[in-house]
Image 1 (cartoon, helix red, strand yellow):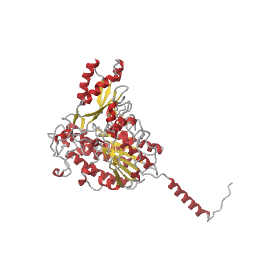
Image 2 (cartoon, helix red, strand yellow):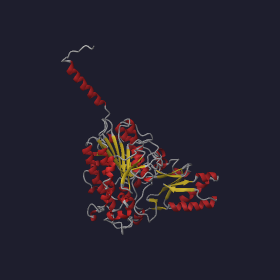
Image 3 (tube, one colour):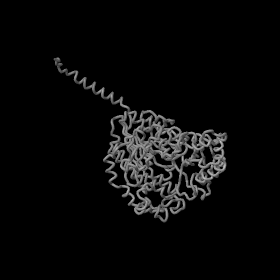
Image 4 (cartoon, one colour):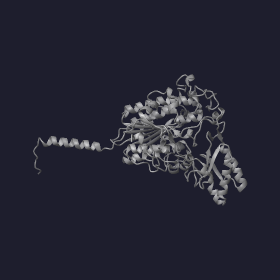
Length: 558
């Protein structure tokens, strides 16, 4: 029998005090982190777009981010090629293609010659789509390094929720990482948001319910006209010009775009090339926040939402940088971002989340527009390069198909054929490099395996980009560096493109705002790979395992 302890009026209040102090001590010991981190990637956004259209921006979108956040005004991409998959991977891994392995949207496995899409995974099936549809056979397995989202999951023993959302599959799969709870992308055939069995076996009920609204169709039925009177779009050239591409069924690529009619022939793929694609993406993001209860995790356990806004890229590729369509989509995106930030304020709490906005790459002016206005520029006819090189190699070595492809501004060789025929590899490369060096618009040609003596005359920043972008297992043997304002295409190619080393493709915006961020601005040069380690410092987690970047300490007030 236990002896009954008499009540002591003094000990009881003392116990209450001790308990309160212990609880307070435990609270102080809790790691301080935001409840939610939101990454906003604006596909193909040039740094200058923060200011080019600023006279028409409202106070609560881009201007709020600049006013309340920290803007790194001189953020550069430090590798080539500057493509979507590479940019998304580099932001979230803090690394470069040499290490993380995503050397293009498509790349070639040098060991086999197999062409590989960046998120291709034939071992998984689509969810929310037919099992054998290739649009669903996607995962992050080709990404060789961990992401900051992976490191957050590891640091919290997988208690953090990580979700990726984008119209583009690669825009969500690569940032969300290997341990994500879900990644969702848009299927144009069905108009549904889908995923793959890498993440789940069935779509959550809330996604099925969201798909049932058929929002893509509802948006497109509104048509696309300018937000303001078209004659007030002073930052764009005349709407009817030869640098833009029109849709089947359009007489000219001009406003208004009758999307309600065009989608009958084009299908729901059309929404990607309108501002409604961004609006739909943010609608889906808000549903994910609400239904997955993002930002409502345990104290010290942050959730992470990766959002990529892809329509800006599709519009740029079709209409070019000088188009009214570009000005209009950014004016509309400004409003969409303002609405999304207000939603975060209400749902998560204004002081409880951290958001960062950046881009995967920027873009070039259309070379024809540039030369029409007396600038230097032009097109690299890479398909013609390959045809002529095939003929020359056939003539010199007696064999065809020695070159597999000219992809990502790189020449990929057929190593199996060269080895089996015991051809002289150095002689083959010499023929290729001598030919390419003579082509208009080609600044440098580099043999990536043997680095010829002429490489010493390549400026150091370009050399660094070449080295960072070269992955021995997935990149071509010979690298082509274009002169400024030259890129792959033909004078018949409308719109814009990207992928080269120049500032127009590599100078991107970067703004952090919210919990843990000191408002300010800096023109100190930083790089795309510095984003992940900055987030790692903010969240007190390890940098991704392939990280080569450094924390931007000014952002954190350090």
